Figure (cartoon, one colour):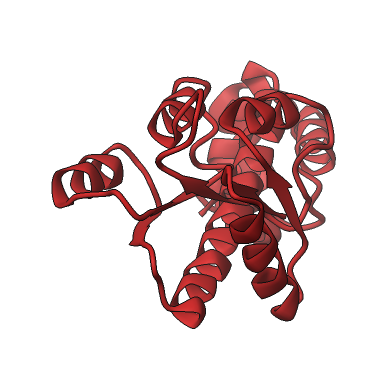
Length: 196
């Protein structure tokens, strides 16, 4: 989902059209406040990644303040921000990029270059969402399951894991089954690939 935050209707409409021409879903917001309210709602972001095209100069809450809120709430990885402005300068761009903005474009911009960066930001958002999902699954493992997981990832067989932890091989098998279930994998190779 491409979130377009700009106070000008014509800009929002043009950017939405550009996004749709690339097969991307887009949603426009006339203010930073409207956007921040929307992203707090469950299901307000897409499953195929998200990206925010954010105008710097808007009445009310400007784009920099909106970005600060995303960073403060830990959403900048899930919602990569590409700034758009006709009033930016090099220090503003450098500062924004240092704080985690995905990119910074001055108006007028090249449509294809902008949309290429949007697609890259969407891919980064998907990757961040996948990593967050893996971390959430890891958090469901018990302390013992984490120990077994570490030994499995080290390439140890069930008998070796049992000897090392001082538990029965059957208990290792049960832990292993729980780990695979919680991590949503079927094999140790798949598990290693997920956690690399």
